[in-house]
Length: 444
Image (tube, rainbow, N blue to C red; front, side, top):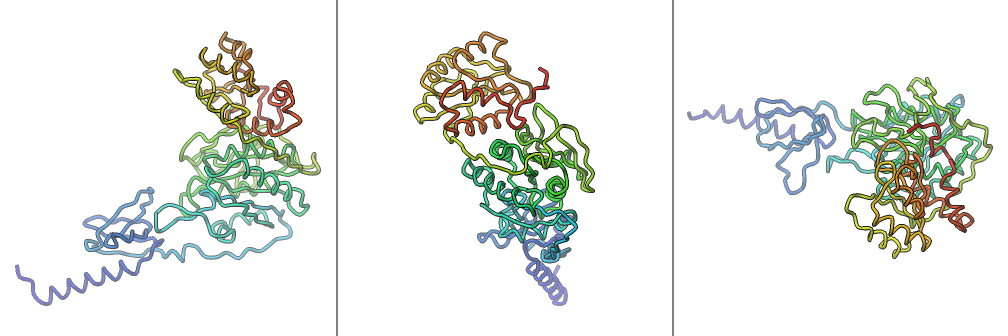
């Protein structure tokens, strides 16, 4: 059928109108796309330079979808990106407690990247605040420190030392009631353990928190985690290194977890962190209510915080598995490693080949500690002959300590020259319950 000039003109006009709508939408806008017989809603992404003919959309389920711009029937901008995030004026209230924040990087201090559909670190501390106006409802953020901006996989013992010294300075400021540290999730429990040992008994709380989803996503867990962290750091009587995060998948309350007994147990859930071989110190609600479950060090018992950030970097965590050659231990010895935490099987066993190699290297001065590959329970070298041989070979069995805390503690202990004069003293320190890394009440 031959179309009339009027019909062709109308279709051309409609097509130009759609093109105009597509071009007017900017990355970050919430838009509605009419494509074929379906309607899609999501955040507009920036298309790659190699294919500007494609419109990319991030759906609410987190997945991205692409459309040929020429085939889009209609497009509506539901909310402009600039409308979504406006600067919030931050006013200090003298009736509220003052806290300090240390921003280190990770998803909680990252924002949505319209170019990639992923996240990248915020440019400044000020840009963090506009996403969290509720943070200032119960506390004043008096100081903000950004010693570095790193994802947690890039962090190491030098960063732990820097954080410990920074915490010492902030906690000894009479105007500050507590500290919040924002951190990436993947290796957060290493940092919480390191700060536990390096800071020891505290005069005020140090709260580490996180988010699994970036702060500008509607499903972000960051807001509740920060609100609850502000309550623990500024108002509560808990003076310990703790991790505060979602207790379940809902936005109703958070758990307060001891820094040396917590572990990331899920790749993506909001309640990713769980206490291992112990229990939560408390449950905290965004309205300020607190339910206590376990004993804790209280404010005021210690007058000053004194950091002890010594650390020996030549330590390793090695998992034993069936058929694994013990020659791997020679590699660590040749590289001049001072100590190894061995993740042994079950209650604490390894093969005869490994026992022989451990005994050899222990005789040359290497320190070996044993934890279990099991998540719950404790190791005991006296149950089976394999364990008794490992004890004889020099392995220090670390009861119910989790492997990550054990690695950090070993590096911290071996960093003290006065403690490494004898293996007996090292063993004594490794088995000393310094900041709750052991649960002596746990059965089995």
